[in-house]
Amino acid sequence: MRIVIAEDSTILRQGLVELLTFRGHEVVAAVKDAEALRAAVDENAPDVSIVDIRMPPTHTDEGLRAAIALRRESPGNAILLFSQYVETKYAAQLLADRAGGVGYLLKDRVAEVSDFLDALRRVADGETVLDPEVVSQLFSATRRTDALSGLTPREREVLGLMAEGRSNSAIAAKLFLSAGSVEKYVTSIFGKLALPPSEGDNRRVLAVLRYLET
View 1 (tube, helix red, strand yellow):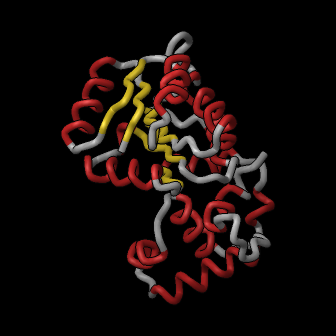
View 2: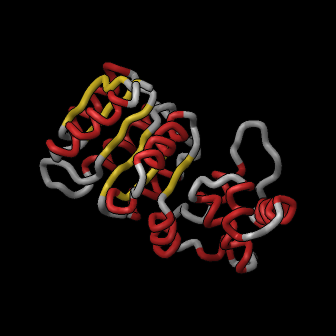
């Protein structure tokens, strides 16, 4: 994959460059601020960008706002947010564009390099990948609780695992259910959230994001 990295920590930025290069990927740009990120993506058209949220000059949410701007300009810009923090307000905006190709991982919770690389590949392939803690805090922050009021506790549990980017087979293994049972839960969720089959929309993503819209 061709990758852009936006990370203000020199050590972490260089570490990511070396890791990804060693694994056979091409890091086309490694920058330290949001303005340079936007320029690098425009110039290099990467397969995916790894973006820290808090970068210069204020170290608040520059990276996240730059990611939203990049997605607004081109929904095909795949973005993996990689941060120590969960920023619920702007993160919900980023996820709500529905185009896929978005991820949000917490640095302190990535235990295996293989998990990080798998998430990066999935985001580049157009999937949505979220850390469970990100899912939990986004769900807690939303004001649209009525959207899920009709779901059973088990359906909410399944939806939470869907939000993490898990497949039906992975959900079945996690909850010790049969694949058929998970399929029934997923179908029920789609029905209760009024998400009919559509060639143009990913219902799994829409089911998660319906609840996050403000």
